[in-house]
Each structure stands twice: as C-alpha cells, then as structure tokens.
Image (cartoon, rainbow over all chains, first blue to last red; front, side, top):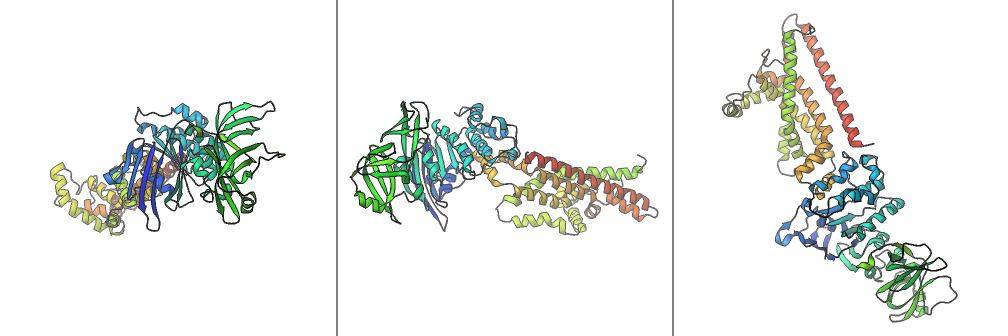
Amino acid sequence: MMLEVSLTHDFGSFAVDVAFTAPAGVTALFGASGAGKTTVINAVAGLFRPTQGRVVAQGEVLLDTGRGVNLPARRRRVGYVFQEPRLFPHLSVRSNLLYGARFAPKAAPGPGFDQVIEMLGIGALLERRPGALSGGEKARVSIGRALLSKPRLLLMDEPLAALDAARREEILPFIERLRDAGLPVLYVSHSIGEVARLASTVVLLDAGRVLAAGPAAEVLSDPALAARLGGAEAGTVLAATVGETAPDGLVRLDTAAGPVWVAEPPGAPGTRLRLRLHASDVILARARPEGLSALNILPGIVERIEPEPGGRAFVRLRMGREAVLARLTQRSVTALGLAPGVACHAVLKTVAVSRDDLGAG
Amino acid sequence: MSFLSPEEWTAVLLSLKVATVAVAASLPFGIGVALLLARSRLPGMWLLNALVHLPLILPPVVTGYALLLSFGRKGPIGGFLHDVFGLVFAFRWTGAALAAAVMGFPLMVRAIRLAIEAVDPKLEQAAATLGASRIAVFATVTLPLILPGVLAGAILAFAKAMGEFGATITFVSNIPGQTQTLPSAIYSFLQIPGGELQAARLAGVSVVVALGAVLISEGVARRVAKRIGGA
C-alpha cells in the first residue's frame, strides 16, 4: 500500500470529507473543478492543513491530526508538479533541476541527473533560463525538478491543463514512463482522456466527497458513473499484450476479453498496452454479426444498464475480468431486448492504443 | 584636487562615509522589517508600520531631538550603549550615521517591502516541497528575487543620507571634521559673507553624487532584471 489519505475540512461554503487508499501506479483524482482535488493533493504535500486528517505514504505518517503529527512540506519528500511550472526565474534550467537534490538524503533512491534529462529530452536546455523556454519545455523541466528531489511519491496537479493538445501529447509519454518506472503518482485531472490513458486506480471526487474509488477498469466501466466520467467522452480501458503479426500486416492484441486486431504496429510482441474504448464507439449486437467491415467483435454478457437523461443509456458488458461500456439509445436497448444476464457482442469501431502497465496491477 | 578646499573635501568624504555606514548598517534591519510588514500576520504590524514611517512625516528637527533624548550620553539607550560597548553617538560622526540611517529607513523599507510583495509565494511553496528549509527558501529564492528592490531601497537611503540635514544638525551639531556633512557645510558657508562660491561648489558636488547614484542604480537594476528575465 503506497498512500493512505483521509481528511475532513470545512471551508464554510464547502466541506471536504475524503478517504481513499492508493496502491502503486498512477492514482487519478478525477472530478470537476471545485470537487476538492487540489485540497486533497495539498494536504498530502503539507501545503494545507485540514482540521482532521491522516496521510500515510509508504509506511511513514506524514500527517495525523489525532496524534498531533504534521510534518512540514520540506520533510515530506513528495515531488509536487504544480499546474503552472513554478520554475525559479533567476536560476538556469540546470540549477532548477538540481534545486531539490541538495536537500534530499544522500542515500535515498532516485533517478540520476543524466537519466532524467535524457528521459525528458531537456539536455539542450540546461544553460537557459526558464523565461526562454516554451510551455511544454517548462512543464518537462518542472517534472524533472520534482523527480530529482528523490521523492517517495509524485504529486501532479493537472500538469497538462495549461498546455495545448500538441504539447500534451509531448508530455504524456514521459508520465507514462514514470508510471512504468514504478514511482507512485497521485495525479489530479479533470480530463477523462488523461485519466483513461494514465491511471491504474481512479478516485472520483464530487463536491468534496469520494463518489467511487477502485481499479481504473472497474470505475471507468461503471455505467452509473459514466455521465460524471464525461458522458460522450466516457469509455473503458482494456489491458492488452502485443501478440503475433498476421500475414496481412495486422497485429493481434491479446486482452482478457478476447483478441483485438489493429493495423498500426504498437510495439514488439509482449509489450503491454492499454486500449481505450469510447462508449459511443461500441456497437452492441445480440448475435455475432456477419457481413460487417468491423474486425473487432468481443462476446460478453450484459451486467448493468443505466439510463441517461435524453433517451440514451450506458450498458456494461462483462467479459471475463474485463468490462466494456457501450453508449446507445434507449430505443436500441428495448429493440435488442437487453437486460442483465443477456449475452451479446460488442463491435468496436475504433480502438485507441497507448503504452501501459495496467495488467501488472 | 584643487577644485575643493581641504575643508570642503573633509565634508564630502565625511558625508560619503556617513551615508555608506548608515546604509550598510541599516540594510539587514530594513530587510527584516520589510519581511515582517509584508508577510507577518501578527497583531500590531500597523504600529510597526507607523513607527517606521514616523521619520518621513515628522519634522526632521523633532526626529533629531528624539535621537538626542534617547541616544544622547544621558539618554536611556545612549547611556546603555556607552556603558556596555563604549559606543558614543552624540556629537560624533557615528551619530550622524545613526541620524541618516533613521531618516532613510522608511524609504529603504518601502522599496524592499514592495519587492517582497511582488514575489510569488507559490515559488517559495515549490521550494519547500523540494525540501528547502525556511532559511534556505529565503536565501535561494526570496532574496535573489527581491535583489532589485533591495538595491533600489539601499540607493534611495544612500541618497537620503547624503542629503540629511535637520535631524543630523539637531542630534550631532555641525562640527567641522567631526559632524559637518555636505549639507551642514553648505549651510555654514551660506551663513558667512562671501561663502556663496564655496556653497555653490558643494551644491554641485551634491548634484553629481545624486546623479551618480541614480545612474548606478539604473544600470544595476537593468542587469539584475536581465539575469532574472532570462532570454
């Protein structure tokens, strides 16, 4: 168990009452603005002291109001990547990166300087000042600065929110590498796309409370939460392993729900991947459809149907230990006679692939 | 230099010494008080603020008289400093430096305080999450960022010290070679018939020193801004 958080605080107009545990990997704190995400992450960092709370990271008690324990931020050894990069403007990129290293215990485990600049691709920026960097470069330097302070866990507060889509695509692979390197990460986001791509555990916050918490695949495929998880943007993730390449060039990805074929070779055989399926890109059929151009058809059993205002419904199909969410109209639900326990097939129109260690958890 | 008489040189050099010592000795206090005023949420900060600003709004003669009462050899502070450290202020150049420091203090504190208020506390927070203690945060983040303000405050105080007259003459009088600073010397020359030329020469020196201070502060501020701004 990597991180245990419980806290209550009354802001007057708004109260936070949150408790969750985060295992290894990326734990996403997901919710709309004002849900209390930043309050939680600041309490973990020691920048905010809740009326009541307990934070235990990797076995060390950082905060326990009941026992009067409240380590100051500088002793918590959490790397904090803020929403804005917060680089020191008077120091060079190199000095910014090395800032935390001199305060970290010499014996603490952590990545080396060369390793970090290589991973983040910032070797060419070392002698520059933050004022001369682009937004994406600043974000990478601030991630590197947090990593080089040898933290026991990494806190990231919407590190991509201020960046455009292209810059986001530039940073996401680095965060994936961090996750795959085994550093526990608490990741605040209100973008379901980022959460689906990165998170192994999802904590869904709403108005200061935990609405749901658990493995990403389970929380993201919960039809009752789908409306809060982005509505049309909602979708599930499947853990996959790259399999063999067929003679026609397609690559088989093995998932617990069945094989999925993709055209773009996503990596060498054995590579672990994460497939993201938008609920609105999934078509349901009672019988295995014939004469259809779609390649990927996975059999499953309807587990739960959750109507959505506006004539639509979210349907969760159970496929072994995986689950897939489909978004269709309530008319289709009736026409197909869908009900819990009914067997049917999911036709996948598109599949988004990203690197992953989801299956490791 | 034959441009100034030895007597005039004495006054100029004394003024430079008094102003330099006044600024150097009061700068740490100025930074400390500015930090308190900008950051402390303790009650009573308004009182400290008012006290710091008092020399700016009181007639200088009153400030000089207050210094004489408290730092004179029979005053409570002056007596203590004399008995314990052998430090004497009244009618000495050290007293002129004290008067100059007190008169320049509000200007110094205001400039530094503005600079501190412009520092983004989020940067200091970031330094704390990276493991820096409060002292380390101040030394490595806050101080470098407020350096332009500190320089501006120091130069303002220096200029004020060079020109200070009322409190100085009240506290330490106008003794040539001892406490006769540049403004006191100008005043003295204006009191004697035929002293206008000497007074004018010293006034010219004042203008040159003041302009020099402004030019140096501008140059330094530009270099510091460039260093911080990157590019």
